[in-house]
Length: 453
Figure 1 (cartoon, one colour):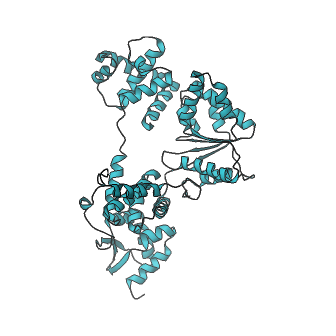
Figure 2 (spheres, one colour; figure 1 turned 60 degrees about the vertical axis):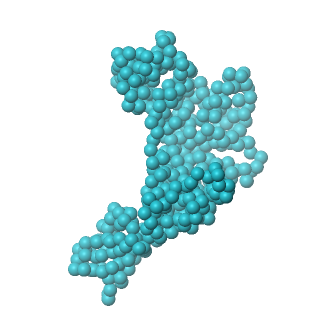
Figure 3 (tube, one colour; figure 1 turned 30 degrees about the horizontal axis):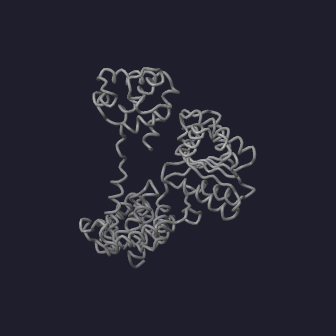
């Protein structure tokens, strides 16, 4: 071989990686030289260098040794002239105030409208992280007789596409079988409908609505935790639908066994059919999502920019889509073409926005009040009935666990109770947790639910 470029080209052929990874990370590398036992490579940006170092350097060394017959070190250098732009991040303006500029308002409106697209199977990016859930939903929606899991239970962290799949099922069924009675709702809506049906003496209407469905698509069933009467109603609804061969799909942020304080009969119904998980998408899937979103809204992005976004926003598809929408809006209202620096600015803003907001005392009290059938005022009151006292003690314990407030500050939130009263409540709940597994699970699940609100 006459040049290091030829050697590096042969090494690239030996790499067993996906086409997207090859196109994104390997093909843009420029082999500079082989100096003694050091291979010098040049890439376009520091984040590309970091990804190569974390994922590909061992492969490079292994294959170069096979070709050359000796160990080779890898030196990756950055050529800052290669990225699409290198303007400092501080130079990238934020979206300006728009209320006094109608032209900008119209441009931004067009950008947001262009970012909305139907949640169909065509707009869902399939990958290893969601293959089973995607295939199962498509089989259900298309009525494939040889594969029709019922119920289908899809679980995974928020923002990974569960609701998108439910929407895709509904849209596909409406297209192929427009006469179906499809109910697509959230657990919260089901619970509120049920409570209101009791409050306004409309239980017959409630049952007619849900038990006459041809398809029930129910999102976020983990919020049935602790709501005994609502669980009973869902259990009865499930039995009615399933016995009549009506399709049911549930989604949740956890497996049925991980939903604490839920009736075992209902848990078993969740597990009757197929459990399909959706996990955090791998890089190739994230990149495909970014590419698809950019294409749908007509945003022209350099491959390095898309790769940067896909690498930095790893845990949530909504963040990926949000980054593209923000870049499109910023490009429209400022007239600046999308750049790497713009992507860095937008990603930083999204990461800052998605730092979990502090859990407030009000949120904790309202959630616990809802579970115990009380009001926030009752939990804060001086009333001493058993259920109110229990709810109050749990609220104090949870607030102590997750807000960082001092005992004195917590006491002020509960009608000016003194420090010793708060300490007593916390210790009492701690003791019960240590000796009662079911109670511990209930409190842990409550804390997790509050964190997701």
